[in-house]
Amino acid sequence: MTKLTGQCLCGQVSFKAEGDIAMQGNCHCTDCQQVSGSAFATIVFMKDDDVNISGNLKAFDHTVDSGNSLRKKFCPDCGSQMFTYNLGRPGMTGLRAGSINEKDQIKPQFNVYASSKLPCTILDESIPAFAKMPPQN
Ligand SMILES: [Zn+2]
Ligand SMILES: [Zn+2]
Image (cartoon, rainbow, N blue to C red):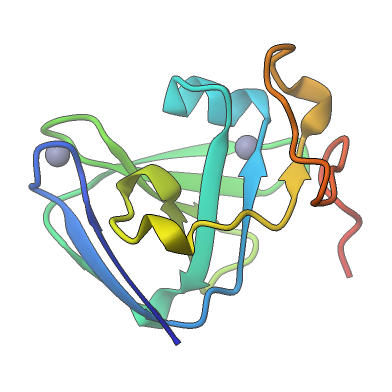
């Protein structure tokens, strides 16, 4: 059982999550680079039911190469990216590592889309790296 709390830059959006972390990892896809403005996104997935969100959010949907639609939710006041959802695999909320207060809980298990990582990004060789997404099912 893990308890996570977090908030956006301005504090308008906050969350409390309590449950098991389903998985967490680093995504180096171009979408994550653009939306985060950073080298890669570290996402911690928990069940929707385990995540309690307060504040107003804006959403943006986009389609990825798997054909799935992803939904990004962000604070309309300060622009912080807060939550990400794969609409093709409902039930899970992706929390963004940078918004989580309990930093010692951030332990990425894998790197995905390593083929589009920035040349300057050094991958942790102790965890698996996949050129795109690992095969599913
Ligand atoms: Zn905010
Ligand atoms: Zn990504």
